[in-house]
Image 1: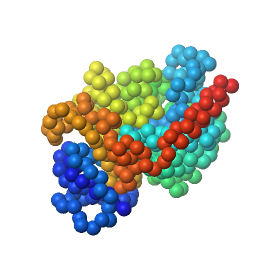
Image 2 (image 1 turned 90 degrees about the vertical axis):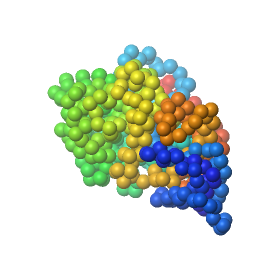
Image 3 (image 1 turned 135 degrees about the horizontal axis):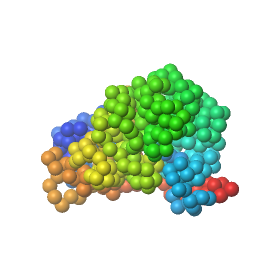
Image 4 (image 1 turned 45 degrees about the horizontal axis):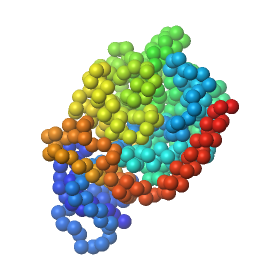
Length: 422
């Protein structure tokens, strides 16, 4: 059944034009929206009263980690990490090796729920579970679809747990992309051999896809690349053809040379920044100087709130980046452009958020950016529509039993934490 958003004010996600209208929303991946002066006489639609509400296209997370969902509140690692590589070794690589199918499903269901309640109806995820690789992407996909969120998934292929695990990751990716849109995931240059990198790029080309990889998140990634291969990370990516696809996503990109930024800017690849994660890991600050406008935003698994990520990027960037009021919104919305320009489905115009934004000041096209940075927050997300379906109404998820899923997630978290202590 179609939805009718009655008496709302639509904000165009690109032009920021405000339009007071009724909006008819078609269901389906290719569904459209129509602006109506009058309410139709037939009753073949569900009416949602939107008087005083603002309606705009829903949000996209450009880089997430489902596998981190059960980490919140877990105990201290066996060794206190002294640098970024030890954070990976003693925290995240310890965690991901303990994941099994039940934990992955619980993580995915929670991530999808948290995302949609924050107005994020599309998630680009980068998954890792070295001892539960085969079938992991299908588990995540089904969980997301059960909740009502769209997705672009990949498995984090790496040699760090052995060449057999790298091969299994390649096979999982190839099998998954037979029936789903997806990317070819790689961990980072310092855990991926030339042979694995070559196979991954070949798979991406064969499947008309792109690479999704962490790049120069810490200086150690560059140090390893120079000492091992005699070149910097982006130079290595270019050598193997990883920058050729406009579907390629380069995560973090903190420690780049001017030449590396030039190589990225001359390619069609996209950069995704993850400000809060960088702060948490104390690895540095993102700076877009020298890069093209192909920059989008992610959360790196820290949370599922893209409005929060945008604000963090803006405020931190005042000291370290070339970011401004217009460019923070552009980066926030660039994930829309990434999906659209590459033909990925699931984020058409019938993916919407209805904001109960109770501003005490005038709100219009001319001052939108000020409201975006200083006013609009996830708490204002009242209703969420995904592919024309109402999946959140008055901040309540309609598609699944949220309490039941959270209760099971807590059980799986305790199982995970117990395994991590062994």
